[in-house]
Image 1 (tube, one colour):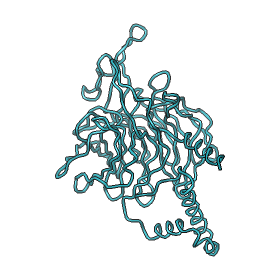
Image 2 (cartoon, rainbow, N blue to C red):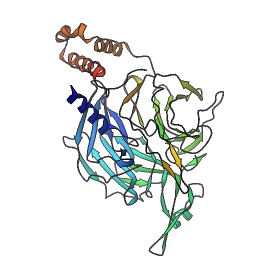
Image 3 (tube, one colour):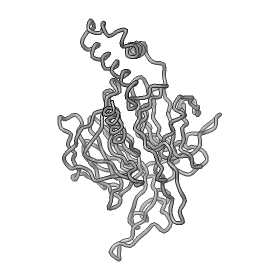
Image 4 (cartoon, one colour):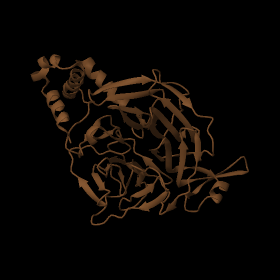
Length: 411
């Protein structure tokens, strides 16, 4: 029994992370990258492994990765399209990067490939940016990074905010600036071509650590800047027109960074957690109704699990699947910097938020799973496909009572 407990604790510690990337494909949650605390310091997690969580059976599996393994990255942006994971930019031990790595997850062996034969002008090095996936294209927004003085002078004054005293001289001749941007950069995965679409309308201010989501042909951006209330912007990905969504008839949530936003098919944006403008790690959930243009606070049973630096994905039956993050991020003021507290606690649990009533089939599967002893002798009489599905569901609820790493299904 002690060995099993030690194994669970070892698995828990290996899964704990923040600022990772996650996505769902065919009922499996994939998790890669991020960092955790080790001896009071940030430790970037290995780039040569990826974790898979079967949302139906509740079983974790680790897969090894080979090939052009990315360096230890922080603040990168991960996107999933047509069976391929794309990792773009981030910061490593040598500074900010603008490299692109791909990983084919439909192949028998998971092999990293560094893209070196792209066309067009690659965006400047950055981190803390976001991405929309639309029509075989990856559309990146914002972030923090470096540019040459020439690039800053040749761009719109409103597209890059230079931080004070954040420039340096390289080799005595080349100057670089560090700061936030609100650029929209497009990568066409079919032609491996970068381009910079010309946008119009009311663009959001330069930012990073924001949340992004996509619904139909519209990309949404929220947070990532210091403000009392949470803002919300929309970009039409066909006309490249920005608009600021007005909150009419209701108050907006507290401003925040490092939160998550997920679009649901019924036309709502689900927002959870983040680091509040006034300091706390948040545990509140909100929905923005795109039809009525109003915020609605969501009552939920995860209020004891605040999160920042987590991920959220759309699961089956419009479930919101939240993984990882930190439960108690605090910042300490220093004379010259803002530092993360060494008491930061990273998480490894999976939280499920139910946003819609479940269909009858889901209710029946869960009922059988929760009462597996009553139905165990009858499963063999079912068709093999249904039998296998229900056996996995039974295994999920059996493990839930024994293993703290299975998902928390409280809605």
